[in-house]
Length: 130
Image 1 (cartoon, rainbow, N blue to C red):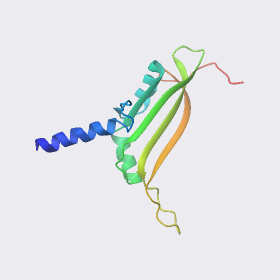
Image 2 (spheres, rainbow, N blue to C red):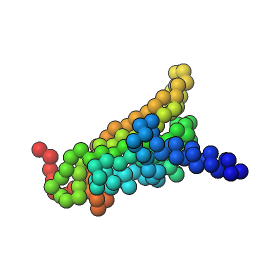
Image 3 (spheres, rainbow, N blue to C red):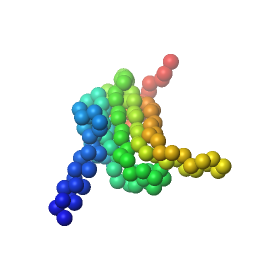
Image 4 (cartoon, one colour):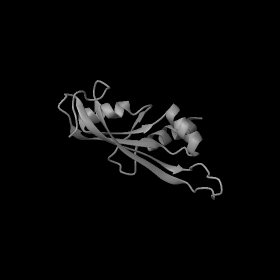
């Protein structure tokens, strides 16, 4: 029984460390803590756990970790606000079968997007892009 517990702990830690050993991933149940950490420190790295992981596992037929990277790439006049670049990735994703098409093979999926965000949990106010 102790061997199983140790193996479980080892696997959980392995999920939190990527192939790049210098990047340690924090387990989080939402991306908000990573966004706040990136605002404060310039970047943050995490792995989604909990309900989100369960939903992804069910829909995409993979138990691979959902990695999230957030980086501060710009600033705003409003204190505590910045532009964040976010990347979410998961390996071994199996997309739903399209009618008349062969079943898709597992692949790594990645989404990249940017957002303006403030440490108060909201969005910058009163700034307009030109």
